[in-house]
Image 1 (spheres, rainbow, N blue to C red):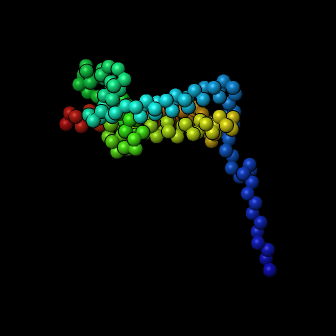
Image 2: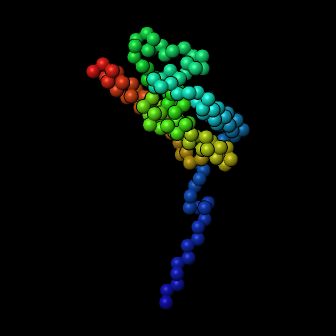
Image 3: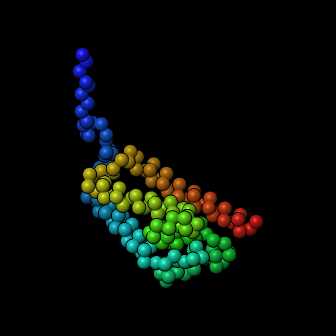
Length: 160
């Protein structure tokens, strides 16, 4: 009769939850400040009422209207970002996407970055990040590319 195989699970050897990028005191301070900034940003978004037009919510903060809309009559690539965040924190994801799909994407990324940042602070390393430079370039490039694609689509849609 065959004996059942013994499977032992060793977290340390089976899964590497850390990276080769330890963070020192300065890195922890910066990462902590980034987390506080993100939480504050969501707090500001929660305090704003999304503009039903789909953009212009930032004006309730005392900021001027979009220069691109004022000067050229076209929305800029970031038009609707604040409105998108304001919808996002209320769970209105379709409205957030309609305001600015890149804004919804950025809000999702920021909401994931908060627990990721806290986890990284706790373990003292950039958690599950193999190459921070490549990751940052990929994330910024993706949101920027999506924002530009939406901008082109808006221009084509408005002028067809």
